[in-house]
Image (cartoon, rainbow, N blue to C red; front, side):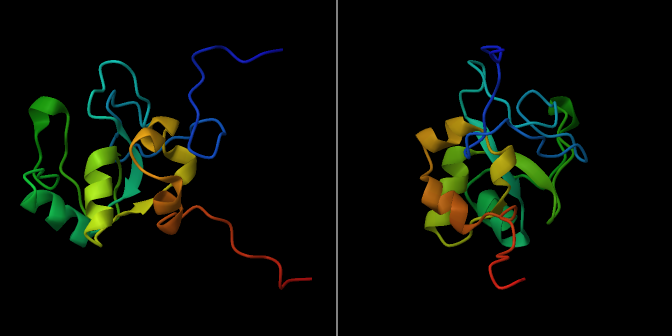
Length: 134
């Protein structure tokens, strides 16, 4: 049986997993970094935001810490998971302030902007190396 055409994939080629529900994230506020034609900013990178990342975003004019209830945005704190704009994550990466990334919850569309190697460098969902265990 084949999968429906609307199945969304992550950057690893698997099914897109949820990013975060507290606060509720995603362009569509579904908890997932789903992306569609309305998401021109490509809110596709599931980031675990850090204070450094949030400060850099604020300096770039993208204040992610101030609540904006009119947009259903609670304001973020370090440790929150949030679907961030791929270009913004890439800017932070290039400046040495990238947030951690959950690969299984990062939409494959992010790869149109961000190299997989950059995402892997900051992945937090990579399994531990078990090669030394018996």
